[in-house]
Length: 239
Image (cartoon, rainbow, N blue to C red; front, side, top):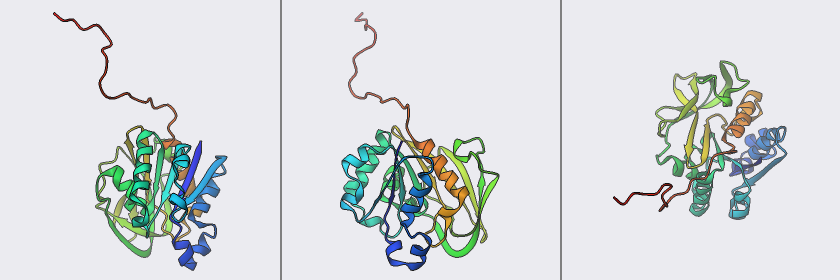
């Protein structure tokens, strides 16, 4: 499996709090723990040529992980469209935290993907609502994070095909924090935690969920369908 971790990598350059938590960047931290299970893990960032997402790179990527926040509009429309097409062709996509507002995710969902939010250092409890799903393997009844950014309903996404996690926040809100979708031949997993000023991606339980998500979205045997004008399989009677 070839995994590519994409990150806009802007907060790390501008905010010492973020660079202290993630000295190798959020992408580096995620690639680091994914490298424990997969040999072929690479990274790409916004300021690289073609955002690091050339045709060649995308063609060889089985699973793409996307993290973005403050620079969604800096992603070129044609690059976002290429990523969308690769998902339709079968590339797996894991969308993390504020990448709910990325051009790629909004293109695939067809909605605004808007929500409520608040930064107040509050506790988050991610309840497992589908304990039989492969993405929750090794997870208990819930994951508790001491401090996280709040995301609250209503989350303007299509009804998920599978709801995996439901978050409760100390301030009282709830949020659909783990959801899956299928688009074309590709599978998409949205996972909410991961605000840049908190060490969320150093949490072993969060790492485990992302590892499971990568395995789940990886397309191993989805058949490629043929569309358009088709010849009959049987002889058609002209009577």
